[in-house]
Image (cartoon, rainbow, N blue to C red; front, side, top):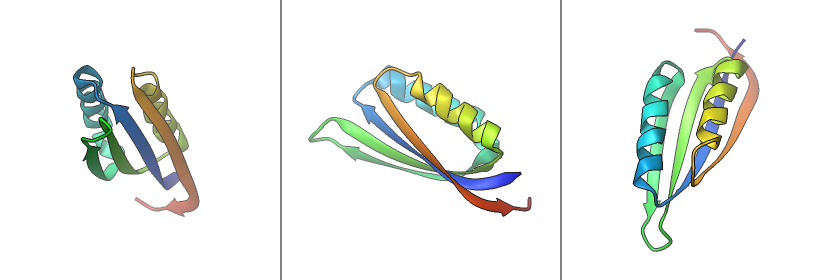
Length: 85
């Protein structure tokens, strides 16, 4: 089942983690529909929203790998809507 979901990522200022996020997102590009990042220079954090279309397993795998990175906080939500590819 292919579903639509969103992954919310908050990153504390950390260039190594930012590069690791970029690498992970690139490796999962086949399920990424779009993404938007907003830096908050005052507080030293960045928020990234990633819209995904994939199986629960694919979305969970990406979310889990992101959550293991230092200074990275992740939450995902997957809709009940099933889509055709």
